[in-house]
Length: 295
Image (tube, rainbow, N blue to C red):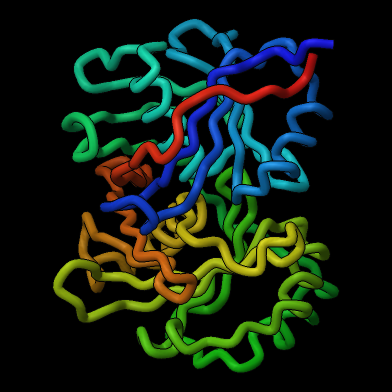
């Protein structure tokens, strides 16, 4: 049986240069694929996320995507949103109108902003609004083990829902983030108990080209550490804003993530006048071609 060939891109998202960001597989022409086939390919290609670009179903949407980690589907994620918009523009499947696109995903219709062209193009997505979630006593009992070895900052750890659920934990300083050896098994137990995708640590930084340093751990999804994470950065920004602590960082600001994995990602973050969080950055095309998957 002949396997159908589908257009395919491998992108590096939140990357000033190839190899600095977080890889994303983008598959076009996959409307005939079922959920199990999509999930199987995401597991096979084993990127942090894989997206499938599909025809939109809602008025006003420029395109639709489905987002998969190697083990599950997500309603929203930041680096797949930014990278998929880049891929759609590169493929000519949509054109920005007055610098704007509208992405349809399981989290709804999300506005996108496009500035510049080519490798210098910056794409931003307005993340779903972050909501501070209550947790059960049983989940709280798991938190101390997950936080072992961490030098905590001033803000208390919080569970934020912006599509996926993220534990956001402020640490004392940049060194506390950079040098952290996380308790992966205990973080995984906390994630499973709270149905959260991961735990993100952050701290203010005193650097010339970034103001916040971030690391994100997702061991329950078999991702010990994610290189550069849009939704985690959006959750952190929402939480810091809600706590009235954004002025100490600046607005807008740039977050550094991935250095501990040999990357050097940059996430541009802005909280607008309505309290909405926008995350963005540059995307580089690494591979452009076709793949054989499905029938």
